Length: 306
Image 1 (cartoon, rainbow, N blue to C red):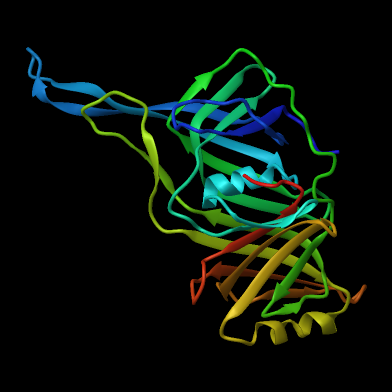
Image 2: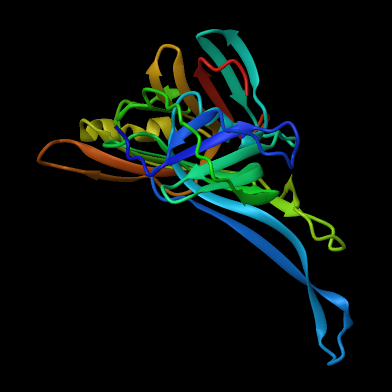
């Protein structure tokens, strides 16, 4: 069972400044950071000593959390990062397709770290990094920003999903062909910046808006059973547009796939072990927008909506 440093709970808000009780829960993988941030500005007037007045301009909240990825709850973080999905299918196999949006629902993000309960109100995600190693569960590190940070004295009773995505279940395809290899390590970073904004004339919680350019990168190391298989890696990469897809599967109705059109950012690195005949290859991709979306995350689970 994964480590548990407390829980991360998320609840969808109907109003940006009104927190709600969490309904979807993750196990934390390390101690979370949920902090209040205040920005200040020089007021265009001077005091009796000729010093500019410094006044609060806005306040907002930030959070850094690392969680075990579970089939239902991960949709809340994806929604906070990319916007609400397009959902098809019926129970138990709902299919949620997340692509970058410009409008978002706000989320209450509540972290209980064994000491206190910390809330990020009106939260959106600006960065989500998926990491998977051959000896561990699929995890995600999220960077979130919200209109405010508060504390609450009553912890929720978390209801965890029974099974995260299991060890060693990642499938990689490049240029439409599956790579027959064991995934030793995968890291996929979805970076879609969000920033707080508030008029300098008021001291109030900031609103949060999309900002900047989306960026998706992937790094992976795979282990081939033979050096011959590793040498054929070039066959998968010898095309101009490389369709990259990474899939983690729990059962026939439960999986998550991150797919994009990518370019190699460096030449593949490969090293053979002459004793065993096995070989490792490492390569990195950067997503490009050719004709469709920059990235599509497809989530299959039993959750009807987000």
